Length: 410
Image 1 (tube, rainbow, N blue to C red):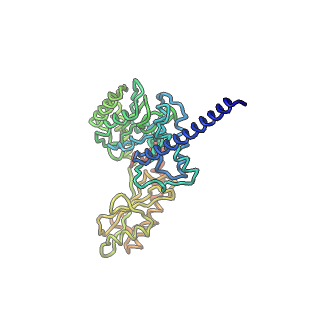
Image 2: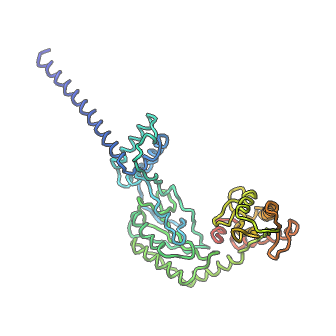
């Protein structure tokens, strides 16, 4: 081997060594830049979870990036609850990985966050290792992970389909939907979009793109009935949403809708029944601490009002309500909301039992609305009447304690 060949070999080895050293140096600088970016208050949701949750987050991001985006198509289905001026649910959004899937590639910061979390999971590092000054926002789930709890009901709802001429991004949809919440409607209002990828109605997601939306208002309920004025204001709000989204919709027949609303209101009123028992003090009025302690011992939990409690069934659904007339009452009222109770539940027995339990704890007596003593035997005649009432509800298309009943009588 000549000296020239040896020299070339040495030069080649030195070049390879230099390239290797340069690569390691660049890798180290990249990791330093990643840490500086991640720890600088960017607000990346991935930093919120610990090492155990990091792998799951990375998996979720990968799933959302792998799926191909398809344009939504309208299909008859149902939607969420944005009731009476409440639009807080409309802003539920996906995480940064969902956004990257629309763009076609994850941002550099997101890929860096994923790499850092994978390294932390492999080395056993947790979220507690991050500096205290790191600010993170909650992890946003894909919109499809939060399907609406409202389903369109032809008997209860006026639902209008808004057909967009082009796909509209989620931020624009959310902004446009604010026109519905700017008005204060006496009946529940709903707004949803169609997610064709998951084939279901969802709340608008700021990272999504949609061509079909649904706006609806309930026709009647315990709160009231749809009037001509309310219908006019609702249609005007929907028209503003449609204009903002460059969408069109079919204007319904007002007379037919108002007639349907009046008919539903009559059905609702015909089956709006409460059965109540009163526990009356035998002597002095009870104090607030006495009443709270007695309600707790009788199995009631705190309700929405300071002098209100709720008794639930085994599934946690409200069965009875307990209400005091004041902070230091001489009597309390137990009520059974008949249409809200499933027909198979022995709610009447629970009403009598809890009234007697409270009377025993408070040293009072159970009476009816006229102040006459009530016991289990005197209430026995009510049981067949209650069963007949539930049967009439079923014939009217309202399942006692069912979804339709809960929407009408809440």
